[in-house]
Amino acid sequence: MRAVIQRVLEASVAIDGDTVSRIGPGLLVLLGVRRGDGESDVGWMAEKVANLRIFEDQAGKMNRSLLDEGSGAVLVVSQFTLYGDAHKGRRPSFIEACEPVEANRLYNLFCDQLRGLGLEVQTGEFAAHMRVALVNDGPVTLILDSP
Image (cartoon, rainbow, N blue to C red; front, side, top):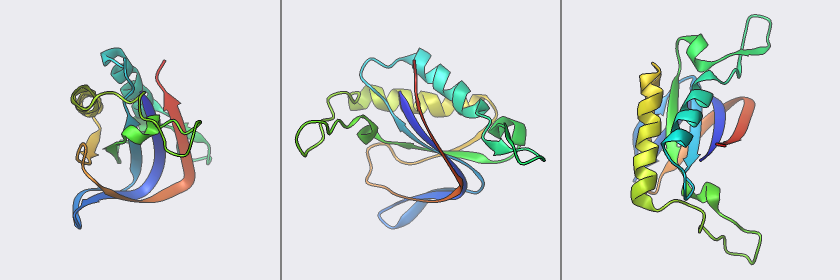
């Protein structure tokens, strides 16, 4: 499982010109599911995202997590292209990406686990053509791969 995590002032997802999700301050998570990923990867990633200390404390140090902040939200967008391999040729191969039915199940489980930790979670629409907008805060952007 791979996540691109961005600390944002705001983020939104639009489909066919209609905004379907919007958050204020928090995290935008682009989530890719790899073949062979399972529920243990989901649990690891959800705990990591919720507890990442990437928000500033009173001294200006990144010492606070989204859970510590007590406010803020997460916008989770499914993105199989995170497993695109463009090492050979000019067209990426997506052979490492999980098949859609299982990827959707794990994506939804990830969102549910974040909610279970007490976070407000908004989502994109799995397998839809989306327009994602964000105002990155910092900018702070991290890439995480599950073990």
